[in-house]
Image (cartoon, rainbow, N blue to C red; front, side, top):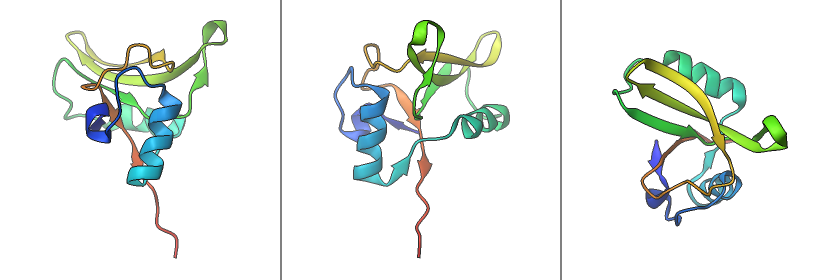
Length: 105
């Protein structure tokens, strides 16, 4: 997990900008939707009231809006939902989870 601030990005950047920057600057890659679902299923150590956005290429949601997954641990338990990928609500303290790019030899 890494915050926007740790990536050196300002508030309110889009999910696409976050993924592109993290890939170029840190060798991180977005998760696929399948990887995000698997991660949500196996995360047993997430602390209560914690949440993280999944760095991924946006999916088309209702109304043709681009969305990404968010994994949370709310008072009612763990959940997986979506958030707008536009970035209008992403702040420097928000956490994103990536995968490390595989090194090809």
